[in-house]
Image 1 (tube, rainbow, N blue to C red):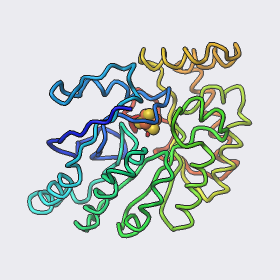
Image 2 (image 1 turned 45 degrees about the vertical axis):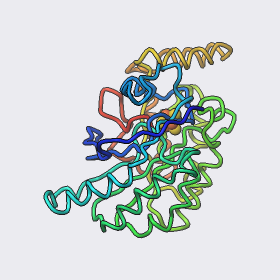
Image 3 (image 1 turned 120 degrees about the vertical axis):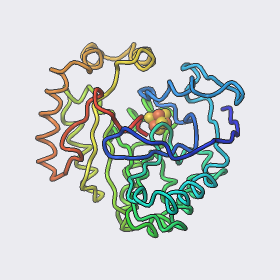
Image 4 (image 1 turned 135 degrees about the vertical axis):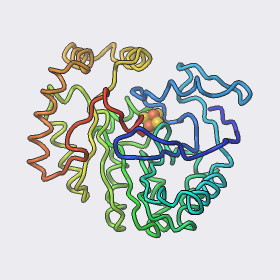
Length: 298
Ligand code: SF4
């Protein structure tokens, strides 16, 4: 994997997401390389002077590290405090187009340093973290010092083979479910991000039933669910390349995943299973991609 250190000019970006006012992405690119990740288009925004732009086909093979991310967070929080105190009530999400706890965070510790900046600033707003990595538990000490921190862990399946297949270098699904258990045991508010909602659950609702049961078992109370976004060519191409040997039913489920009748049928399954397991869904229902969404996620 190629790693390149760069300096950013700002770190808190205004967001159109339904549940975040600002997003922080201390890394550009993501080593986890999930096949369904529609942040793969982000490479085109990397400036030539930094070494970009990066083609979509390279997603998962590069990470640009914003080495001054924590310093910028401190500066920007300082400006909020002095000149725009109303922003201190914002909801800030880390991250929307990368994973804040991908492997190189162990070396650079940018996410930890940003959390420390928020603690230092006594940030009273909501600081949300979204990840697929167990490394988030390293920072429980800082998360506990923020009055309104919450952590989302993305879990799209309870089957480790499926997660290895779709989320190529991300920690296995079972590891993420265990991470939720540890966060809940530590008293950190959590939710599971079930996104994208895998299209084949339409034919195998028992698999979604199993996922919800496992989430409930580790103390999850809230889920955030998003339909798969296959409207962009790059995501469709990457996924269909690897579905070559899948059954006709599975291929068809993915081919029709963006159709409204498919989504409505999945919504009905989700509603029944949420009620069965006593889980609450955030934002009132399964999100669609004509709405602003969480980003990758992530
Ligand atoms: S979906 Fe999230 S974890 Fe996966 S590659 Fe994209 S940013 Fe990384």
